[in-house]
Length: 292
Image (cartoon, rainbow, N blue to C red; front, top):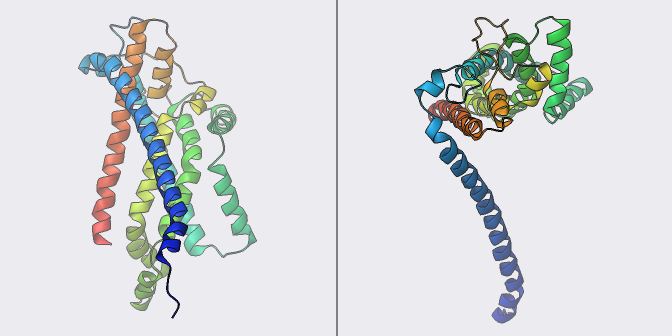
């Protein structure tokens, strides 16, 4: 038998080990750099805006006087916007994903649709703003209302929800479908009672991420012409409104330091809203993961 020269083996392994340690340090440094920047931003926002964050700030309407200005109009407007975006985008997105994965035949036409959906997910948001301005604001006559902005933002996040829902449906084991068919269930019963409950965690994850993007987007709303200053609350989906990103953008453009602090406080409110949405999604996802 040929004896193994352990010294030569170790010498050959040294370059690989050095590369492994080097890349590990590079990735660790990149991670720590990102966390450091995030920590600095959070520290800056909290120290600058925490002093202005109280019930008066949440319950007051916008004002040209910083000591009287509040975020109530923008906060309620954001909730109105999500009230339109969430049902429209989730129903259309999940429905499209079910059709493409469970019913549509695999041919060139469905491949064409799939490619276009994937491409739409990378289109700049301002393009959807121009589309919404043309179709919903001018052609449909909705103006700068909740319904116009909600439909525009639904188009923005729709490709993301479709792709995420398709991946979630594909991840469901085929054995579950076959077992359902073997018990005499129809295709629709299998989708509703077997496939969808098992795919809910992935669908929720993609849906919440998409809705979080809709809350934080400003460019499409600027194109639609949403007001930066609005001192009344919307009463229906056809009323004019504003949202938190627009209000924050308005305050950051003011030269007074008080308005800069108000913008930081508005960012805190927006972060709390986003964290709350993601927390609910995590709780629901964990609940379903224990069952399936």
